[in-house]
Amino acid sequence: MQLQDGAGNTVSRTVQALFDLKGRNALVTGGSRGLGLQLAQALGEAGARLMLCARKSDELEHACEQLQSQGLDARWVAADCATPDGIQHVVSETLHRLGPIDILVNNAGATWGAPAEEHPLSAWDKVMNLNVRGYFLMCQQVARRCMIAQGGGRIINIASIAGLGGVSDMKTIAYNTSKGAVINFTRALAVEWGAHHITVNAICPGFFPSKMTAGTLQAVGVDRLAALAPLNRLGDEEDLKGLCVLLASDAGKHITGQWVAVDGGVSARVGG
Ligand SMILES: NC(=O)c1ccc[n+]([C@@H]2O[C@H](COP(=O)([O-])OP(=O)(O)OC[C@H]3O[C@@H](n4cnc5c(N)ncnc54)[C@H](OP(=O)(O)O)[C@@H]3O)[C@@H](O)[C@H]2O)c1
Picture 1 (cartoon, rainbow, N blue to C red):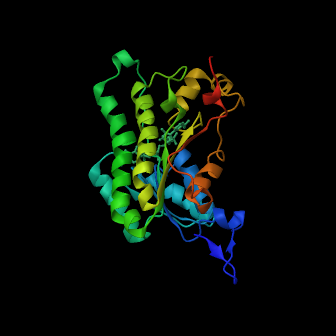
Picture 2: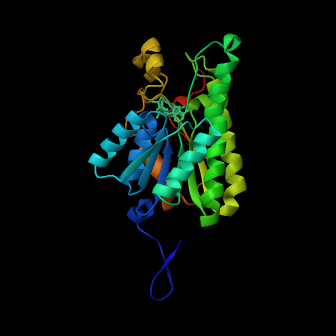
Picture 3: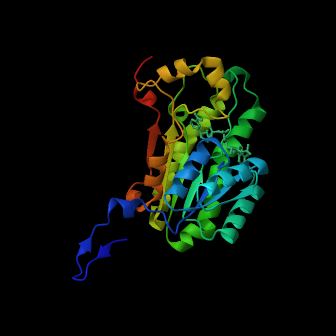
């Protein structure tokens, strides 16, 4: 959208206006804790109205109370984002209770640790069904039921640096494969849906403390994982906020089909 002054000249908006998400509706999967809650908080602080989803109602309720206590507009719906029925339910509830979805953050994810030669097939399917099939079905539902008709939208897929290759100390072959798939899914979908003015981008976080990484952090050690990053640190509760709002807002309207690592430089390193 371009603004014009009284003489018909194009006027560029301020940075504050470009990053403003007031009046936008955002759906964040896996928004009850961890990275999803950080992403929801960022979108809410920038002005968006929020719908969070995950499976556990108590954690969703707690997350919403936390966001509401900070003056943010948040609600939740419990569903399994690995199933077509669950995804359909989330989208129906969001459209009904929030309105058209402007911003979709596909963040709900699962992992499984096992040496590749012993990795159970059932765990491979569980990881793929949520991390890849679930992202695809959610994008398809949201596009079909609102973004295409409304002439645009923003999709942010949470991938991982694990989607760029192997990671020392992690034996998570299904997870790495799924996150690699998310990156190319993002790029291909951006090309296909550019015509609908839907941008599709991926964020590749490095190591952030969360329920998902608690076991690895304990087994490998915080210092050792931090040392994999040139910045010698893990991600914290604010490191994803800026990129998320950039990709969700008019400030990012010309960015699509990209992935950006937020990893302290882990993925920039060549060799050990
Ligand atoms: N933490 C990191 O260092 C890191 C690094 C790179 C990428 N990531 C990615 O970031 C995303 C969030 O990870 P996290 O570390 O914040 O993990 P987390 O703390 O385990 O949070 C996962 C979230 O997803 C929800 N979820 C899990 N399975 C679900 C399902 N079947 N249906 C609906 N919701 C489901 C969980 O809630 P319920 O259990 O209630 O369903 C929770 O809200 C994932 O995609 C992960 O791969 C994380």
